[in-house]
Amino acid sequence: MQRFGKIEIKDNCYIGVNCIILPNVTIGPNSIVGAGSVVTKNIPPGTIAAGNPAKVIKQIEEYKSAIIKEWEIQRPENYVLEFKKYNEYSADIIEKIKYKNRFLLIKNFKNIFNNHCVANKK
Image 1: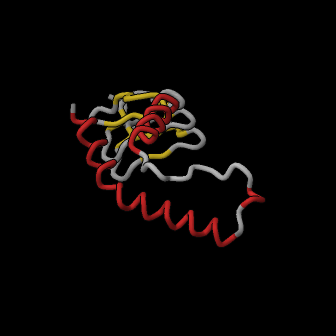
Image 2: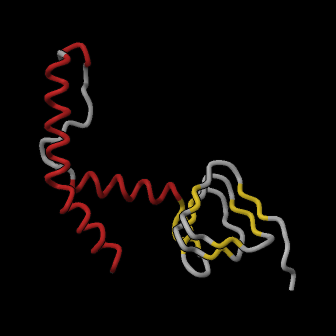
């Protein structure tokens, strides 16, 4: 059994706390390794991996699109996503809208979080 080997971590990777990465493993660029994972094999670029042993869960682009879709469904009704024409709004009005958005997010965060957790348990 070989006890020493190169561990290669490419650019823009996020590695969760308490991960164990075994020798002769490469973690591809733009990848995420979940906390407490044991990485025994190479992780491809642009993926999310977790577990013991670490397995690829999803591509990052798939995850982003799923989260955006979920946000679109659960977003508060009056939440303002963007200002179409910045010149039409004064600084005071923009601040009021931002405050209202924060309030709506805080109010609905619990529901969004609970629904996300229930969906992932299925």
